[in-house]
Image 1 (cartoon, rainbow, N blue to C red):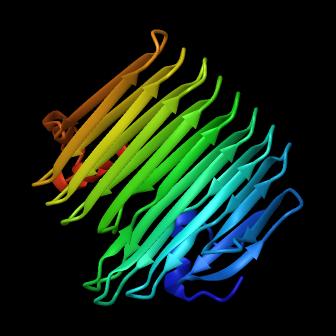
Image 2 (cartoon, rainbow, N blue to C red):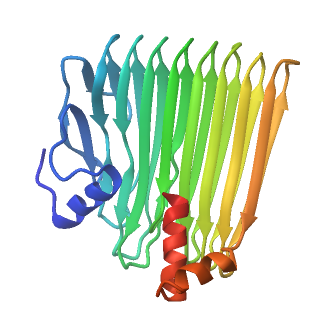
Length: 308
């Protein structure tokens, strides 16, 4: 791994919980260039022959292994689009950690758009963690527009943890999934916006096989003058089950638009959606303030627990 400065190391800790070189396979990208890579016996990482990005090949039967592919940007004005494809063989169980951190202390906007495609083999399980983080006191914006596509084979399962709780000025997250028989998808999104930040999350999950299922849950907090939109759609094309939920706290002059939707194309599709938006309950604040917390401290405690 090439030498990173203190700012880049801090970004790496925020988005990937890395304090040192990770065990297993990894590919680190810094300011538009490779900063380190390692393949293992069961996980191979190779650069694409055309364009920017990598292919990750995980051999059938790989279990209890991980691959880290974080990105950090500390150069103001840098804009990039990266394409990463994951090919997960049959009967695997792996952890994939991605995410991007941008520190912008300049006047120009910095932007990273990561397009990730996952091809999950039969009977395999993946856990995918994607964290976004922004810092820096410059006038330039920190912009992230991730795209995630998941293609799930029979009896496969995937857990997605999508987190963004600080410093990103603008983001548009687009996630699509196609599930075959008995495939299972779980999505947990945690999001907080503040200032004049904007965030849009789009999910479209197609349940194409009998016994397939999806559970998409978003929890968010909109503070100050920020704006959020959640557009989550589950499509039932077979004897399947799907659930989508949006649970949001609105504060100050924040704005939130929740658009949960269901599309049933089979009489045996069982689909449910829920949405709730509201302010912090007064009795919660009072209870914590009686324990000696200020109102601001009580709010932070409630928000921290809500987004945990």
